[in-house]
Image (cartoon, rainbow, N blue to C red):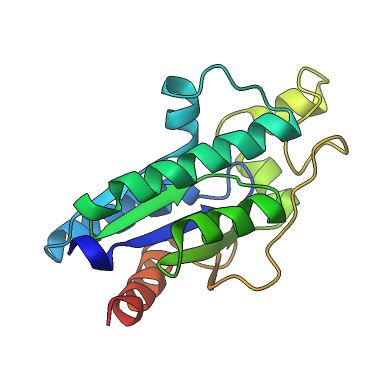
Length: 177
C-alpha cells in the first residue's frame, strides 16, 4: 500500500467537475478496499493556504505546497486525488517532479460555453458582471494552460459522471499493476 500510492492530479477549469469526479472515485476506491485521500484545491486554499491570493505567483505556490503535502501523505494512502485548477504547465511539471513516477496528470475538460452554463459556483456570472476580473481561464489576466500530454483526458461535456469514474478506475487498475 504505502509505497505504491498514486497521485491523481486533476487539472481543469472551474466548474468542469473535478471535485464531483474525485468524490465519486473515492467512493468507488473505498468499495474496492483501497484507501483514498482527496486533497481538494478549494478546501486546502480555504483552510491551510488562506494567506495566498489568486496572483500567478500565489497560485503556483499553492500548487507547490499541495504537491509537497501529497508526498507527506503518500505513505498513508493508496490513491491521492487532487482536484485543483492548476492552470500553469510549469506548476504541473514541478508537481510531477516533486511527486515522482506515481504522479498522473488527469485533464478534466469541457468547453467554456458549457462551463458558463453550468456555473456551479456563480463565478462566471460574477466575471461577466465585472465583479471578478481574474477568473482563471476566463479572464485575459489569468490564463489556463491546457495540458499537452496528460496521462488521461476526461471530457465532462460528453461523458456522464459514472462513465468518467469508470474510465478513471480502469486507468487506476493499470497504474497500480
